Image (cartoon, rainbow, N blue to C red; front, top):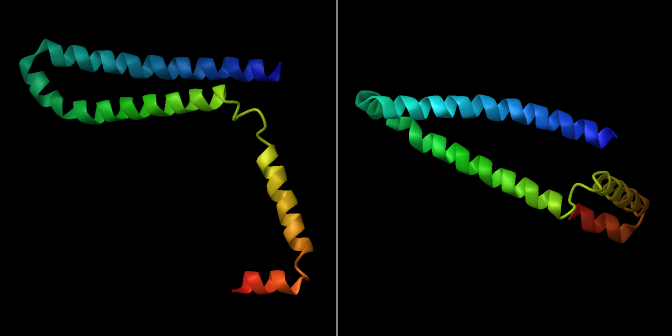
Length: 104
């Protein structure tokens, strides 16, 4: 139930973001197509805009790949592993060989 609520909120927020960016992008394209002088003045924004779109698409693909490979299934696991490893290392702190290897 909790994950469905989070998914719904994410879709709503991303929907508003996509609408805002999409409407500004369409407005930019219409402005550039409408007038030759506006096209010459607005051409400077094409390269940064394409960089933004390509980088966003890349991150979106990476997020989708990570989700499909189950990388978000056990978020707490790495934290627990780190704490267990730290406890083992702290338990070995009295070991002279361990202390010497750390001090080098």
